[in-house]
Amino acid sequence: MKRWWRSRHLIAICYFKVLKACYDRLAHRHDLMVATIHALVALGGSGSIEEIRERVIELLAVPDEVANLPYTTKRGNVDGRTELEYNLAWARTYLGQMGYLENSSRGVWSLTANAADPNAIMDLRFKKELKGTISDLQKQNDWKQDLLKLLCETMHPSAFERLVQRMLRETGFVQVEVTGRTGDGGIDGKGIAKINGILSFHVVFQCKRYAGSVGSAESRNFRGAMQGRADKGLFITTGYFTREAIREAVRDGASAIDLVNGDKLAEKLKTLGLGVKVDYIESITLQPEWFKTI
Image 1 (cartoon, helix red, strand yellow):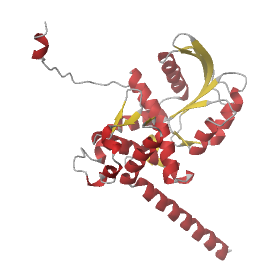
Image 2 (image 1 turned 180 degrees about the vertical axis):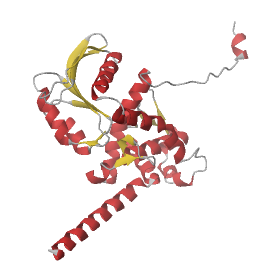
Image 3 (image 1 turned 135 degrees about the vertical axis):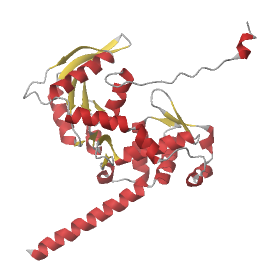
Image 4 (image 1 turned 60 degrees about the horizontal axis):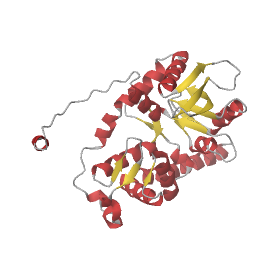
């Protein structure tokens, strides 16, 4: 028995050493910056955050076990992202500061003319014009971590469902109802999504206050519950979705499920001004040349 236990113990140690080695390679931020550039090239010069993430995982051959590692702040707060997503956000931010990337208000990142020379990318680690440190990015996200902690630890589940209801209404949904009935397959509510006032489709949603991950089983169960009841499904969580859950949500031949993790949820609440206030500093610049055109 002792020999069997020792053997299993050694296997577990080796396994986690392999995972750590993969993660150390993944977390090397220079590699992620280079991979982000190559991912965007492969995507035709522009891409969404999700498209970039999937292409980077493919380029670096990141195993699911590593891609699913959760990100936890030094304060122990949940972040609604994986370690990979957090480090990719760091890479995009710094690439933007260096003039290699730009992003639109719709969250699409694209290459600039500065990224046309592949050789220049290899020298990223030696660039001197990097502004700020990794702690700057952490400070920028402190409010997200505090918000998600509040939603998970303080807000009552029924209040969270009402918050999601309000958020959907603010984004253009109509006839939004919170059902929350037990034995309803996990469906928490339903509504009708309106597109440009012309198209509309029925949506059922599920909202979970998770500090950790949502796996493929939850996605499958939700899809099973929505069959014959809606055109699309919307799964919202304060945590994050594993790679398996993401693949299950977009599986060919099955009803599509849109996923909103904690990071996206926090950004949407900020955009809509729901419990998050943004203070802007007004900057006024006089343009004397304009008056000469009168």
